[in-house]
Length: 153
Image (spheres, helix red, strand yellow):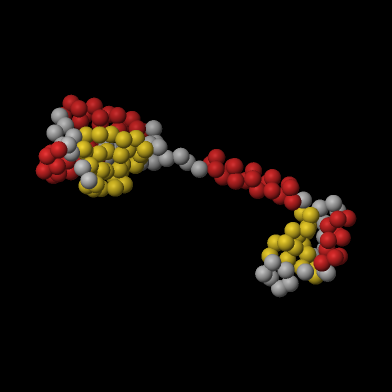
């Protein structure tokens, strides 16, 4: 087997000799690449190796950005005052760095006003153009028409 490590000279050694070298240094013999010809083993402190790997995974997890999605609901007959009120909320959410999911909910027979719902959503996107951009254009899903806005960086 091929042996690699910090305190070991790299080379090809018999298995017994590699195990003895690892025991002399009070370290572990770990198989790195079993499919290679000859197989590659490394002399390391395995518990320290596991600890370092776990620590790196924690750091990576901490650095990931958590995406927050705020939802704003409108109706097909939303008045200007209500529209502006919800627009200010969406503006604040986008400035805070959250995505905004705007949906128009159609109750009962109001589904016949799909075009009004789409107009409201497009107007909403146009008003928020300087704070965010449209990630997903208005799309009808059942009784809801949904649009997603993301903040500009």
